[in-house]
Amino acid sequence: MEIVELTVHELLEKINNKELTITQIVQAYINRINEKEEQVDAFITIQAEEALNKAKELDEKIANGEKISSLAGIPIGIKDNICTKGIKTTCASKMLENFVAPYDATVMEKINAEEMITLGKLNMDEFAMGGSTEYSYFKKTKNPWDLSCVPGGSSGGSAAAVAANMVPWALGSDTGGSIRQPASLCGVVGLKPTYGLVSRYGVVAFASSLDQIGVFSKDVEDCAQLLNVIAGKDEKDTTSVDIGEKDYTLSLKKDLKGIKIGIPKEFYGEGINEEVKNSLMQSIEEYKKMGAEVEEFSLDIAKYALATYYIIACAEASSNLGRFDGIRYGHRTKNFSNLKELYKNSRSEGFGPEVKRRIILGTYVLSSGYYDAYYKKAQQVRTLVMNEFNKAFAKYDVIVTPVSPTTAFKIGEKSNNPLEMYLSDICTVSVNIAGLPGISIPCGVDSQGKPIGMQIIGNKFEEEKILNVAYQFEQVAKFREKYKPTFKGGAC
Image 1 (cartoon, rainbow, N blue to C red):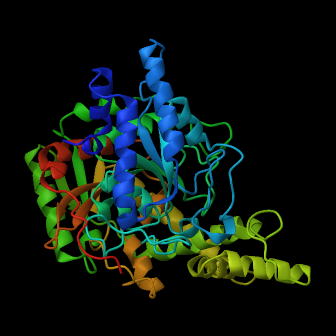
Image 2 (cartoon, rainbow, N blue to C red):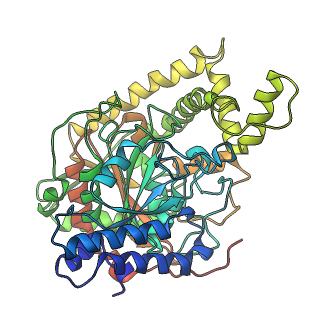
């Protein structure tokens, strides 16, 4: 097996056994990026030289018998809305095209404390608004399983980079499914933690009450290990929660006997592709064989969740993006004769079409005369969604649903139809509305060989349960042993 195909825990074993040096590992990933980036377009910024220098430093420390961190030298990719000191943080937008962050996000401080090596910043939908990574100002990322298809979004660069073995794991952000949906479409593991478990300090905000930093990895064990690093209370983020020290890898060895799995029938109805549905049903049968108790129930929130999500998300985006005005932050137009024109032209030139669409919608629902009818009503429905989940988790340990209604769709297929694109989030947005943890793991492929993802949802701060349920399925399904990205097709 090639170096870049190994999981992080396999890489660590080889470093500890002196079978591989850190420089060999980093060089292998740089070679892979050089080989595949032109096809996949996953990166906005590549840090090859800096990564190699850091690798050599760490190898020298090892040779000299100096103590290093347990994850020292492991490469990582970072979504480009996470501030990285001295490296561009663009949010894939012209508005921040030349912005170099003067400080690190809290998650980056934790990554750096572990002496991991950042290989670069990964492509995304502009300001994390989109479901296909087609709304980036710089490039369209392709799906390694089929280069004519999207990788999902908004963290499509992160998912594609892990799937293409250009990084062993990556950080992304999830506001309404932006980790889980691309993980599903690219056949990797994607975890959206409970709201408040991971600090959002230093992450460029889209919708502050929904955003959450999470993990892309090749398998569930790696996912748990990276969650160990980034989770925890942060004094700089007042929404972060102190739940004490946890080692999430310790939860992976428990069997599923007595675990109760709820199957909400509304998530398997109209609009879900038959192949996706069949793959999920086969996976649920595997859970029964492993001793889990499986029961169908009604979770009648899906029809409300999507509208609720887009009202709240757009309202918060409108507020958060008000700071990008050409004066305080971001792109400044050269074409203006007064202050009003400076604001208008800077924002018109700096923002792309999807960001403008959401700002307009958000400004509308917050405006006088419409606030009560839309935004206030959406927040009331949000409480209803939370209550429905609370009822479900009084009875079930986890809930299993599809991640995406379909497998990866063609580039350009939905980008001209925003409503159709928004419907791609139908299975994921309710998790963000309720602040719950959710994980996407691959559970099969469709007739065209494209991955299908399964979503496992847990109650707040019960990441151990969803990680274990995902891990046990992974051991049986052996997806990575059976399937690999083919890089087939031509990019549109």
